[in-house]
Structure formats: C-alpha cells, structure tokens
Image 1 (cartoon, protein in one colour):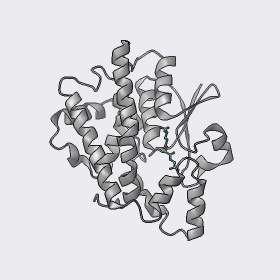
Image 2 (spheres, protein in one colour):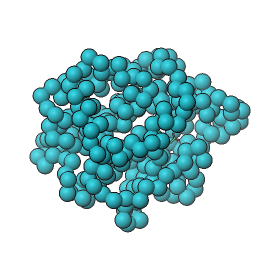
Image 3 (cartoon, helix red, strand yellow):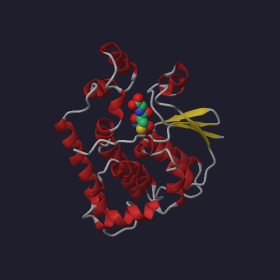
Image 4 (cartoon, helix red, strand yellow):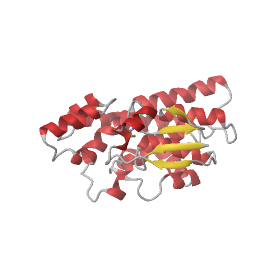
Amino acid sequence: MLELLNNPISTCSQKVRLTLHEKGLEFTDTKIDFRAKEHLTPEYLAINPDGVVPSLLHDGVSILDSSVIMEYLDEVFPQVPLSPRDPVARAKMRKWLRFIEEVPTVAIRIPSFNQVFVRHREALSDDDLEKDTNARTLRRTFYREMGRNGFSDPRLQESYERLSETVTRMDNALADKEWLCGELSLADFCVVPTIDRMRDLGLARIWDDKPNMKRWWEAMQNRPAYRATYYPGTRVTDIYDEIGEPA
Ligand SMILES: N[C@@H](CCC(=O)N[C@@H](CS)C(=O)NCC(=O)O)C(=O)O
C-alpha cells in the first residue's frame, strides 16, 4: 500500500502526485496541515526528521525526498516507465533532476514566501518569531533570513534570474524534442510545480518569448495526471485572496 503524506499547495508534494497519477498508481492521500504545524509534530518528525513534506510510506516503510520518491516509484512500479533505459539517457535525465532541485526549486521559494507565506509571520512577537524559526529543523537559516518582512530585493532578483535561466534552458532543450529528455520522463514532472507556481505568482511573462517552452507547457496541462494533481485548493491563488505583485 502507498500512502503519501503531503500538502496540496506544496510544490515538492505536487512532483510526487504528478508521478503517482501518471503511473496510474493508487495511493492514500494524507494531508499534512502546515498552519497547524503538523509537519513539525514529534509523530511526523519520527517519519521525516527534516520536518518537510512529502513523505511516502510504502507498506509502512518511509521513502523520503520528492525526487528520490519519484525515482523509487519508477523503479518499483516499472509499468508506465518514466526514465530512459539507456544509461547515458538516464544520466541526462538525472542531471535535469539535480539542476531542477538545485536551481529553480530553491529559487521559487523566495518569491513564494515574499508574495504569499511571509504574511503569517508579520504579526508574530519577537519571541514567537524566534520559536517559529527554531522549530524548522532543516530550514532555520532560511526562516531567519526571511524574518517577518521577507527576503531582500537582491535575493529576489537573483531568484528571478535563476528562474529565467531555467526557462531558457528548457526552451533550448525543447527545440528538437517534445519533452525535456525526448520521451516524457521524471524530469518533466520535476519542474512542473515550479512552472505552475511561477504562473500562479504572475511570472508567466518569463516564457512569453519562448515558443518551445509554451508548447511544452500547453501539452503538460492537457495531461490527466496534471489535472488530477492540481485539484481546487492546490494553488496559492485558490487560498489567498491577495497575492503580492511580483517585484
Ligand atoms: N528536498 C525535500 C524538500 C521538501 C520541502 O522543502 N518541502 C516543503 C514544501 S514544498 C516543506 O515541507 N516546507 C515546510 C516548511 O517550510 O516548514 C524534498 O524534495 O522532498
């Protein structure tokens, strides 16, 4: 049995939901409430000591980290394969996964928190802010830097540059293929949540002049797995009335 401990609007959770749906795997969808800090309870930390989602439980065994979970699912359930068989092509796909984790996945957090999530910290007293920061097992430095007013303008601009660089690389890679690695693969699903969040935050103009990227995005949104992943309540614009303007 597969159980996914996840959150509807978490981009890392969305990567795994996309993979599960594309592969047609049934799973129990257990929602972890960030506002109630369910990801920081002793029970959850016993499953995932990093205090982040998603976590996959496969017959009770925990598999952690969204990209690791994606590769695990593809290995254990080889029907509907989402990784090339050829080792060189597979290495290229893994290079995409690493790039996506290191560059756009990290970059998108800065505008996401500045435009949306930082508002939950604005009213906290100094003591509560410190407590909230210290509770973030893996992310203390990140939360400390954000403070109660968000990340600095240079940090935001650097994030935009990294997101633009990602879109440019994708557009170039897609010039002669339908999907990032030729056949549809985990690399495509790994980057979808970042692209979807960019659009949600009003940053879709970044691919206005990128025709290959636009074609890829159109095709992705037509997939049943995409539609199953993004049910109502999975986007920041579904939940928050006002999303700050992109800087
Ligand atoms: N490398 C981890 C990162 C997971 C992660 O950062 N999850 C975010 C949601 S996308 C989270 O749980 N954040 C909780 C927090 O900021 O307190 C993975 O890919 O699974």
